[in-house]
Length: 101
Image (cartoon, rainbow, N blue to C red; front, side, top):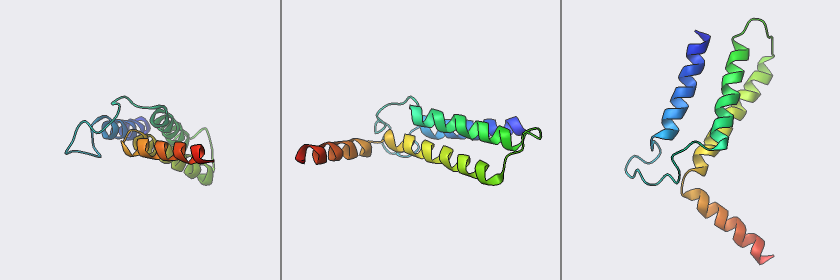
């Protein structure tokens, strides 16, 4: 049951990022269809956190587990944002700020 929950979370995250879930009207808006390092790290961190949470041998405080779960979701959201065309605009804006100074 523990592995089923972890597998469900990982498969749902993979399906949401693999298919153009954010932009169903235009399938070509995603820059690259492969998973980037942030999504992979978030999925790994979430899987480890869920395994630690549901393992009776390892006792971890709920605050620590909540922190790592939040970090995993934040990494995944940043990874999805990085795959969108809006990230290129943010990147160009940051470059223009440093060119001015």
